[in-house]
Length: 164
Image (cartoon, rainbow, N blue to C red):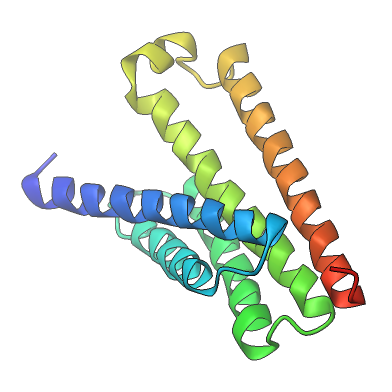
């Protein structure tokens, strides 16, 4: 890998990790307290950048990662619209939560895929990524985001109803 591609990869990874971290903090705010507006803005911006920079890598054919990137950008467009145009008013609060949580899950999913591809110990456990350690990890990740997203959705619904 040439130096330019290495630097680009490092930049993409750092942006991705920022997106995941800020997304988890923003999700925590959705779950327990006031919405953390700056964290939310950083999450949305860095996650959009993650998806956009993902298309900058050389490729010869359309890959599953490209499909995830496209779907993530569509979800993020919905989240940004719900958050900044519709101001989380009424149903738009739930639209934001659903789209943001799924976009965050996609980033975490790709992180797990990359960890199983790049870390020798994990690659040895699941060389084709169809072995049970990989499948179990992804299942735990999916259930975790389902539970967290469900909790954030429940709170969003309560906020709209004026219960919280």
